[in-house]
Image (cartoon, rainbow, N blue to C red; front, side, top):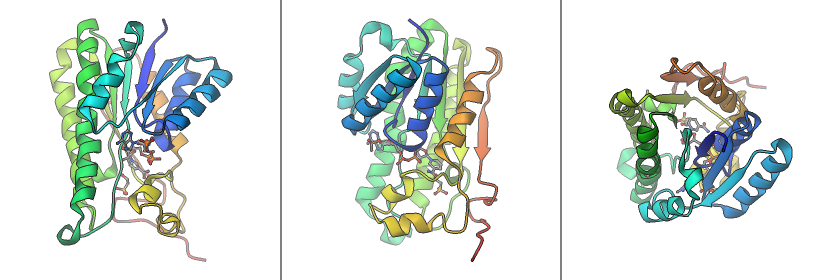
Amino acid sequence: MKSIALITGATSGIGKASAHALARLKYCLIITGRRAERLTELKSNIESNYGAEVFCLPFDIRSMDETQKSWDSLPQEWKKVDILVNNAGLAAGLDHIQTGDRNDWNQMIDTNIKGILNISSLVIPGMVERKHGHIINISSIAGKQTYEKGAVYCATKHAVEALTQGMRIDLLPYNIKVTSISPGMVETEFSLVRFKGDEEKAKAVYNGIQPLKAEDIAEILVFVVTRSPHVCINDILVMPTAQASAFYTHRETR
Ligand code: NDP
Ligand code: 8X3
């Protein structure tokens, strides 16, 4: 069997673009996310366009039970994951800490932090045994800076930064690369999810600015996974040209 990449959150945005990009590199793919029909559609699209083999695993990454059952359902040869892209994640709401919704907080913490731990706890032991593997965690500028009304989302991405560093240290004896990719604004379903389906609010996030595309991040992922075996890209921060930090953007007004 060829090399295997497992991508979480492949039903949309960065994860979906990453699936296309890794299929072009001839990886066999395990694609995950809750929306099963989207996974099936992506599988058939990828198989017909690139001839890559694809395995769909629909599950909610917040649940260790669901994650474990899905992992157990994989044929043995598919469990030898070479690349794990920890991408599934979300922001829910944009609120001051004093008015934040506890359900939103739990959803972000359970997906963005525990979700990474749930799937990583199943994939990493095999990488350790084989002394081979590459983990790519999709963090964010929100993992490096904290912005108003984003305390909990930013806290989860700061946790991703800490997990990335900790994984790199603990996995050092096992020839496992650990990379963090931290984007600024990328136009995906991210803002639609954050604003719970409010299209107007979601669109306004990108008013007067050319945001990154999911494919821009996938292109960086390709660079990261195609370095020589002795080279590990630790950390990439990437923004739209019109964004300088979490706080400064230049918007063209018409
Ligand atoms: P999208 O909303 O387009 O994609 C998010 C993906 O995560 C979907 O495939 C979704 O699948 C999956 N997901 C969310 N919750 C769960 C869950 N409980 N169980 C399983 N899968 C889940 O957003 P992006 O592509 O933009 O986001 C991808 C990553 O990039 C996230 O970690 C995000 O924080 C990060 N990021 C995004 C930026 C942006 O501006 N867009 C900037 C910086 C980082 P499904 O709903 O089918 O379960
Ligand atoms: C997503 C980018 O700036 O909304 O992680 O936090 S931002």
